[in-house]
Every structure is written in structure tokens, then in C-alpha cells.
Amino acid sequence: MEPGNCCFEFSDVRVPPKFISNITKTHSSCQHKAFVLSTIRGRQICYRQTFQWALDVYNNTEGRGQ
Image (tube, rainbow, N blue to C red; front, side):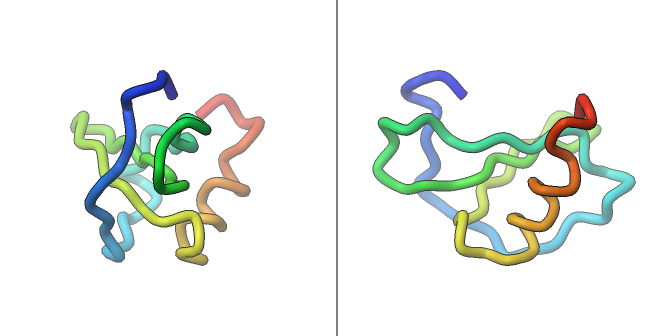
């Protein structure tokens, strides 16, 4: 993520895997550490890095080119 692309609102809604396009971490300069999940419809959803489901999605997609 580029600096300036930070999250200020967070979700706890789990997106079905078939709708997930990508998940990345916010830039280190952001106030809140978060994951940004992109859906196949182009929506971006922020999750706290402490939300276990988002952490699992990130760990499962990392290195798979998603």
C-alpha cells in the first residue's frame, strides 16, 4: 500500500473466499495497522490486523499471487 492509503473505519464482516480478489497490509506510516481486502467487484474493506479471520485470509493468500 502507498502512504496515505490508511484505514479509519474497520469491518468485522467476513467475505466469502470466492469474492476476495486481494488482501494487503496498510503502509507502515498509517496510524492503525490494518489489512485492506479488495473484492472481485472492486470494493475495499478494512480489517484490524488483530482480527483473526483477516489474519488467516492474509496468511493463506500471501505468496499465491492474489
